[in-house]
Amino acid sequence: MHETSAETQPTNQTSSPRMHTATDIAYIATFAALIIVLGAIAIPVGSAGVPIVLQNMGILLASMLLGMWRGGLTTALFLGVGLLGVPNLSGWTPTISALAGPTVGYIVGYLISAFVVGAIAQLAPTRARTGAGATRFALFALAGLTGVLVQYACGTIGLMLRLDLDLSAAIATNLPFVPGDLLKIVAAAGIATAVVKAVPHLLPVSRSARR
Image (cartoon, rainbow, N blue to C red; front, top):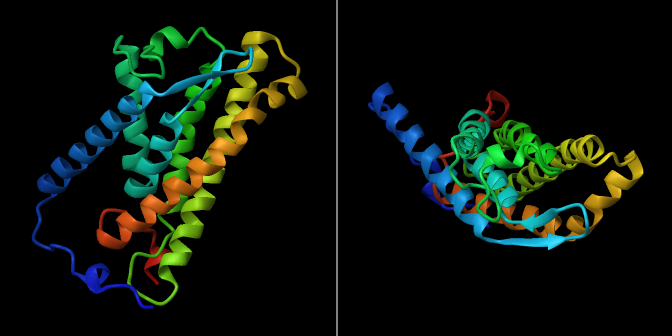
């Protein structure tokens, strides 16, 4: 079936730059708050002190919907308030307190992955055409998978530095999280696909995606 005409509605060409800026700030603040709220869920796994959380799913979803710059700034704001002592991470630990711990690499990975996921997500088509929904979901899923791999890579380096683990042991620490993270990628991609279908102009798109 063809996608609905909701995706073909024209943008508001009369909106001022100031209005766009205010809207962007509102999106960034709202999604940063959502990521913080997701910190209420944390399940300890293994002996390395790395819990199962939903915050990484929030970061993926924010960047899938807001694109590279707004998604990246959302995560920067989320982490930044924690540097001021605001309890923002899982278990209501502020970023500043976690910097000396074994999960610091994952925190760095959160920020880097937000920009990477957003950049890939902006390749997704937003115009209504046959197969656009499936293409969108596939690109969002690819973006999410890439983002999680970035988080794992940074987290692995952090574990090696903080816990003096060798590479294989640090990589093995991530294995219990793989099934859950795959589910979170699929869930985030599905939600983002539905939202962009309903609100196609929410996600900035690259020039290649407009063709």
